[in-house]
Length: 346
Image 1 (tube, rainbow, N blue to C red):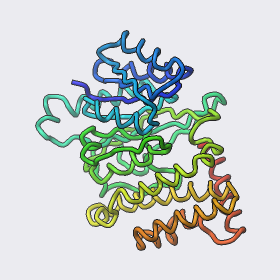
Image 2: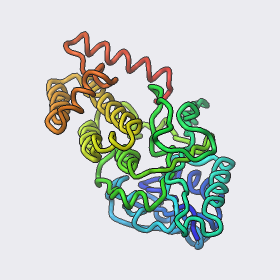
Image 3: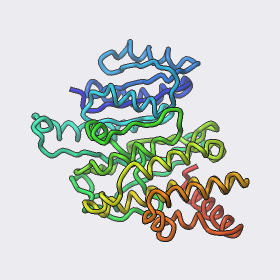
């Protein structure tokens, strides 16, 4: 039995992927590691094959035409045999001690046929992640201690309030594989920022959550070509807008609100954050076309769900990124610069 599938989408990752894969091998034969070579043109494919040859019981390799990060995640979900599923980007890595504690807990929940008998097990594990500016020697941990009880099962109805800097990103999440499949998660190809859809769409299918106060995932920041680099965010703004549109339409929040109002509030806040990021970077572009895109993005929300539009516009943080006039734009950008310094996310 494989308790955990770890998918690593790789594209021209030869200079850093070994750090990632080596950190995952500590899981031994309880895990499967799927290395998805997404049409790389460097030595990524060769390195992946070397790992498969050396660890045939742990490592699986897929060579495919380039389809983008989402395509790699999709392929991993198709092939996954693990009870749980996690994506690890090829420039990131897991902390070994935290990783082994997570695996031990998964084994405990699944031991003795408990999972096969349909007894309650976590649908989602949540762990901390670390913004790691490795080259600069600084990092910042993002935790969820104020939201979830530690080391005990809970539901959406018992969660606390998220702070402005907190949201559930892919790096913090370990879903049960069948939850992802039940939710119909299928990420668009040739599109950046699809991790937002991965960490949002399955949430209403999650009944039981389990938070472990472990600094599990190291999210590397610093590469110039990184998708979260501010210049790249502006360059790829159309893809960010596309994913924001997809997320806002992927779940019926009115239906979620009837079952789990706290979850619905968080999910609306998630859309708000994505709208804010898109709005801010459109402001930073400072062109008439960018301003039109900003208006169109908001208008699509309004046309899809007028109630959602008014809640986002007037009662969430995203409304503060859609202030009128040049002064409103300057205030928005100034607030963004301040938050970036405080939370060190870039």
